[in-house]
Length: 127
Image 1 (cartoon, one colour):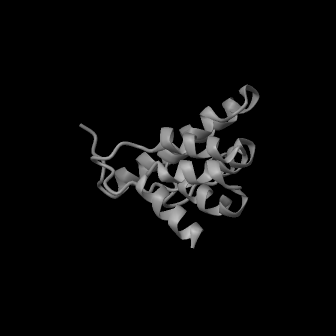
Image 2 (image 1 turned 120 degrees about the vertical axis):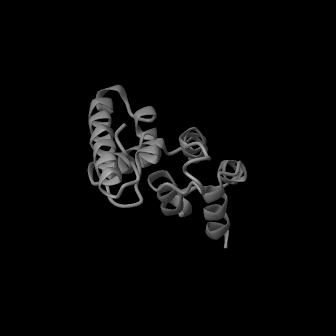
Image 3 (image 1 turned 60 degrees about the vertical axis):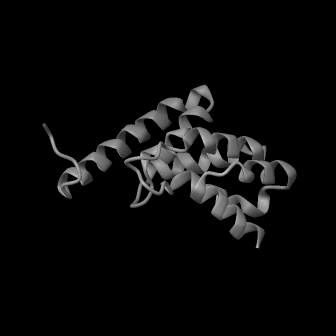
């Protein structure tokens, strides 16, 4: 039940999720949090800003940034549908300096692939 509530709060970007995680052990909720960090759950991408700063607060509330950093970097290395740069760029902020180059190059690759897909599907047009 708690995992379902947390997933709903994360999907809507509510601060309740941060408070919830500060008061509990976040280990049972790792998959839920990781999903929110690697998938764009924004309701309307045209109107709603990205949630990366919010997700950084979520990660900080877990006291396990290394766990999430490594998995977010892995998501950057193997992007798939639904995993978007907006979610993955938070890895740049939770990376130690020696690994930022790897995260940045992965993010650039994901952005290029996302733009190519949008061009193919007609979602994006050159002016």
